[in-house]
Length: 85
Length: 397
Image (cartoon, rainbow over all chains, first blue to last red; front, side, top):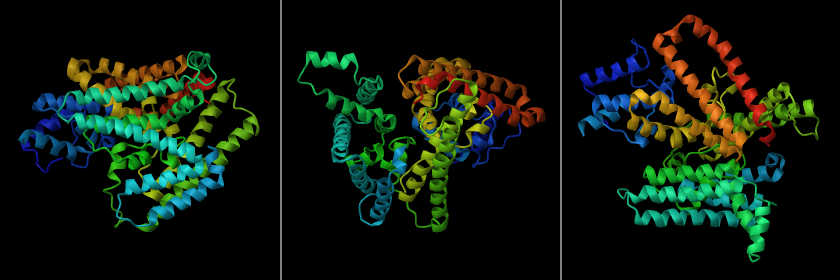
């Protein structure tokens, strides 16, 4: 994980992906949000989430990176690192 | 399971704790590996302990030699890792075929009288501990595909054959075992830790020796086998297996906490699961996590990338069937267990489609569903559990 942070535009896009995938328009992406807090965020939708993010942002995550994600904060900083690389 | 009624086990458990308490400059994983060798030597005898150490050293040397010639950028690295994994898998499957006393062994001995079938079978028996096999697979995945460092042979020995997790797991993760060398415990409240350890060990023993054994003796007598001849037997067996297995896992967890050796939780109120998918996140959790990190996620991720996210639902069918087909085969090489795995995979795929449909329609947030599911869900999940226990009952023990 890196210490980079997402800009507002990217954060908005990321939030939009969560809203559509989990059909939860009110969901707020706090850093400590985990799969347990979001109904439907299981291992199957975790993969869908990653693929959606890859397609939206044009990045690619390794299997290892996907497996190590613990919460939305991890995801944000990983994505920010990829976008600034 | 008889380990726990053997006083030697508990004497060894205490001695291991005392030895681990002696501060040295060596890494925690290395110290545990060395002391674990002593524990296995006392519990299983020096011949088995030495044979196990040599087998681990051979496994380590094979990986080490392969890594030397395949740097992380080398495309042959994956192939090399896959080759070692295949060899380990073939040996595992070979043993799972229960060759002892079979005609196959007699035929081999007729062809090659010099071959010591007893030694050959003993070697294979090492892999009969299915937990050692999955730990080997996890180690190979981490080292070859995630570029994790390879532990030294003694640390690897402590990871693959930890005496407190030898018979019934849980499946500890290679990366977590590696991380024990970086873990510090300076700020950890002592009382909290002691209570956690005592709670895990005492509840584990209570589950195993009070609840599970009382159930068995009450329904089947002290010397009788648990035979499943009706639905009620299936239900009793399911409850018995839970308390037996969860009891063992909790004791192992308690000892792991005591030694500061990563030993994952294995059960979390599985009878309260609201679906079969939920059930498998609560029952034998460490195995579920192993399957998720080593099979489900990598396969699903790569297949969905290949065929597109629109086909993710269909891909999940294949991934689920492969993942649970493996779990079935891990239990036993038989058509019954393969069918069990395929059925579980299918059922969970169907559940996934229903859940996705309900989520898109907004039904999953309706108060009616949220109030009813905690009641109807466990009835359904436990009915599936009882049916599946009945299906595989003949081949559980």
